[in-house]
Length: 320
Image (cartoon, rainbow, N blue to C red; front, side):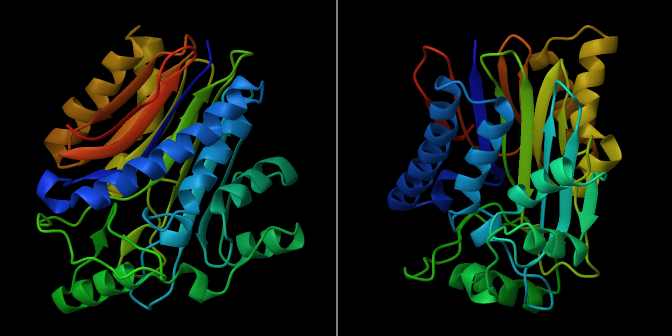
């Protein structure tokens, strides 16, 4: 059975923080990304191609903190991270801090398939993308007024902010900042899939933290922390990266399945609620196992998410 799950970030997503119009926009974007990947799966594409395509769709949407919707650093530019992994081979590729690549997930796959390495950082990762003809964009492409407003707010408060949402394209007027916004939120996009051949794959992409400094890198491009795929499961995480790194969260799900014989759902619950939650690691993850079972687990107020399995209707959700 082939199946696909995607996420667009987890955090304090209260119903009061989104207008009905905003909620419709997020749901439509999730549905579009899900359809992009699912249609490929249905037509016989590999899980790897599927998760890359779904994440590219989310990167191209300015609503999400990845690609075009990436948040600003303290210096006022963008530093984006991404990773991709094939479960049947355990080959993986990742990039950190890229500034010009339109779709960081494509650069991550380039690292996996065209180099002997796993993780490349800026400026080398941008150089590799340029050499292989990936689309590059000027800073104006990644500029959204709402993200810029968030940076100004963070600068005033002197804090870093992990933000999962509330970006808008430059062509539309930005709404006011969310009403329910007490925390520095989490933001990442990702996809996991099982194809018709039984292969699993995972992909994750993020713009990181608003107002981040010193070339901070989160869990997204760290294989085993924010992204993992093997023969047992494929995992993509979203949340406060430092906690996910220390917990080796994505790989821990696979370990619990192998060493304790837990189901995917049980393993995800243990990692998200029993390990990350008590330590303050707010966020969530999506996972899929070798049978095509899907888990969408989070300990925050909400997570932008969607999934679809062969022969079933699409499921799209935001809140708990």
